[in-house]
Length: 161
Image (cartoon, rainbow, N blue to C red; front, side, top):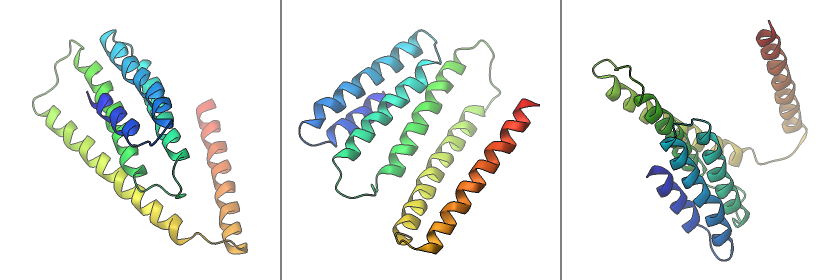
């Protein structure tokens, strides 16, 4: 039901001829997720999320603004969808959870979704503020790229050990 709501939101937010293309991506996402959950196949969840993400990307093609203020909400919705889908598969196991664990998990997922929205808006504000060019910004970008490569190198060495 959550997937269908997200799919409808993404499809209806697109104008013109791209609406049918969006529906061609969103409808299989919902069917894939429903089928995967019915057959207890967790591998269907990332595929469904990817199709819904592609639907959102198609929506971005029609945007005239370079930054979409709805991006944090889409990220939080897709995160919540994936978490609830995996959780529904976990609930089918024969192991009983301890009393009150469901409420804690709902609280954690809600907090994380709100955190995604807050961080998303902070990043959008930062990008909007730093939308300039120059050597200082180029140096920051180069430093970030070097740090990313260093982190990947460290992570690959640790996983290989």
